[in-house]
Image (cartoon, rainbow, N blue to C red; front, side, top):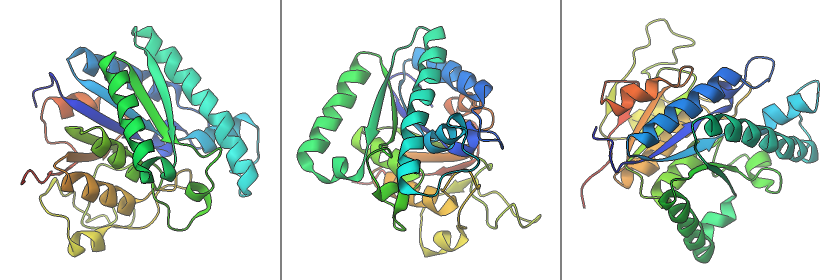
Length: 267
């Protein structure tokens, strides 16, 4: 793809940013900052949607396990947000980039005036060459933590909403698997990667599994729902493995990486 002038949303999940102990993967944070800074240097506008606050906050608070009580989840989120932004600010700063934090909840999208103000904020930041880093506002919003019918769902849907609001050209969802398979690759050795999906229908949804890793809350279905929303608005979506953020270079070069959900470009 021609990178100049492109607006790209990149979503990274908890399982990509943390290890099995719940600690931050510092190499991933640094690699992500380097690659996204380089992509911006190519002439792109970049927005990062980042999960991981509760898991990282719980570890920093030295909790024995991921909290189950709502107040402790919110406390962990508040601590984790500080840690995440400290790391992002530090590593992006190495490459002379300025970042900004935007925390959202469902109400920010539902109310037209709030949504308009949000869009204006994104436009102002991007116009100044600043990289917005977006997450759910888990420290004050209980719905996204406790509800069985989450609107955002481990930031997969949030990343699609942000892509639509910002009229992005591309959404890249960095997952802990290589893309969308015809079977669960964790359970079946014969599972085959589907490299391109033109239409998301009932058959596609039947192929989607349940929850993902134990540190995150999103599974393949939430990624499919996010792709469904974004592609309906003409935005291409790529789901691929985020263990090495350098895969984003392959995305920018137009290589066949992960699964491409083709945006509906019809009027």
